[in-house]
Length: 236
Image 1: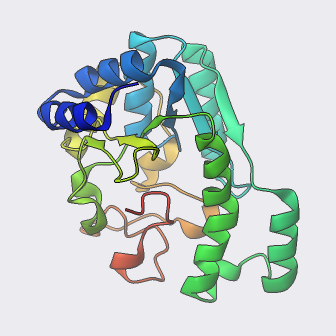
Image 2 (image 1 turned 120 degrees about the vertical axis):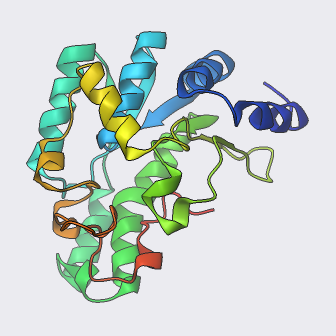
């Protein structure tokens, strides 16, 4: 594996690289120890298309929270059919979900920020830890212009801990227009909720359509203030 010092230098070099160059590097450097964390939003669909063109066996995983919209499952199936991709699915721990809902109810996330974060932890963060167990790096569809919480992201992010998993954001400097231009040009399948003004799609109870002029993340946890609109997956 690449040393921490060499990795930092490579990350600086890749900051000016294209999405394809970054993915080629990641797949070459990490092999089966790198995977795309996919929620089947527009950005993830671009990355799937790019990755399987580089390596048809590229690893993809998703977190099935148990509260996803049907449209998300439909696009997941289209990915399997079009690309022949194998998608590893990680579910939340059944006992943890049962205990959480018994204590706080099925819609606890509306009651307080703390309970919403608890739900995200049980349904997303804990399964993500299991997904990370076999990985040295993960690929994400984050873009700087998506939210105020994402403006400082780098294309290759390295933690202070040498054993920390490396986070790769090939589309960090892409615009929304670039994403959709790529989807249309390459006939990439996408979640049909995007056509209904859902620019960002998560769990069904926590996602709504946005109105003209609203921020692209306004439909996620819309009852919270903008600076809180993260589930914790991308916490620094």
